[in-house]
Image (tube, rainbow, N blue to C red; front, side):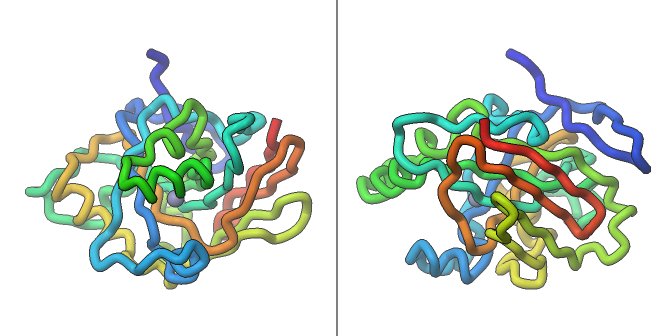
Length: 223
Ligand code: ZN
């Protein structure tokens, strides 16, 4: 097993986080316009699922997508790096978040639809190796307007996804509260906070440029 250590960029200096990631907790349908684009109902509590550490890869390396399994779609999401142990007894505060970055929750959409129809779990569609490319993280205190942040992604120079945290159905603190009611979060764990609308197919050679609050820009491509 190869441990994944998140990278934190502190004033231009890239530092390896002290703790390896033990899991990525994801939330589905956290932006109304995205739930609508997939014809999904709006949940009344966060819809949670887990990506295991085999999915974690560095976003700045070329993104490898599965071949021959139908569309692999990008879901651009704000990623939260957890800085301390948080369980159901911990008073919930966004102080548990140490740093913020971006991630792609890669999804084999056709396979996911098939699995959903059958009422099956959707790991085959979302938990394949490399299904969670993550950026470096920036310390939360460097985001001046936290927790109000904008993020976006262009694909081949065209804007494909953009979001703002004010449009989240469940905000960061509510998400963490709901997560730790079920799963303890450990330092190094990553929380993906849902995708805004605009999810679409990735193809080999696509050029991607991701931006978080004008504080972090990542250029990458699909292999
Ligand atoms: Zn997602």
